[in-house]
Length: 294
Ligand SMILES: [Zn+2]
Image (cartoon, rainbow, N blue to C red; front, side):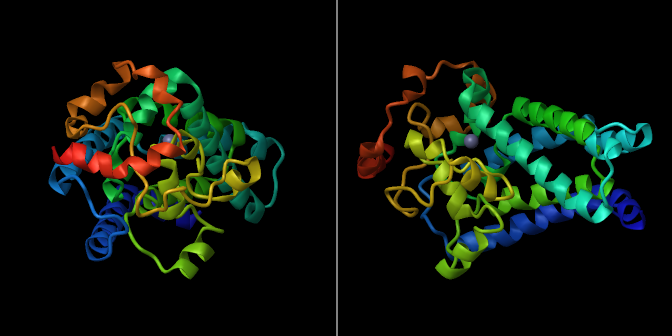
């Protein structure tokens, strides 16, 4: 219990330290050895992605950052949730809970892509036209609230140990920055890492303009669900360095400014998400570059 108390007492400091620390390390790594050269000014993307993150942080702060831990505590006190009704050893309950929480995020991500109304909200994350650590901060506030509600429901249903919830929350903060990194990694290291965690090379595929590639690699922290449920894709057809990132309908630089992602869910996506974006589209990257340049 002492570890939980310590982590809870310093929750805000640990989270902010983790966020700033990992963001800084990733930003430096991206500056030194980017996988893909940025096409859009980082000043524009970062200021707007960070502004969106600030809205979300404020929202989450208002809605209580410890809500998930609070629900886990409530479940333990009231004997609610599967693991309180059917207790298992602590050493089993922790990894089991971590797996279950990550699996629920995987399924929610699938749903965000499959249900048209949810896609409107989630596509804001996909409208970034470069991919780097700041993309990991770009989410519509409605997605943040919906994800929080699903997490609270999962925790109530599961009744996980507090430590599992706390470590999952901290890992979430760290991994979302890590797996949006625009960085080169030695191939042997990346190949080894992607067996235990979703790497940026694995997640980059999910940001492809090619629909079949967007609809793959939904994993958040653990890479196993995609392999298990057949949504795993090793890499984009065009290659990681040359693939086009974003959504066909929202690719102007103007889309990056804060008001656009905030209002984007209200817009109709021309041709219903252009489900037809096919592998042939990936050969048109040069044309895109010209369009941006002009
Ligand atoms: Zn997605």
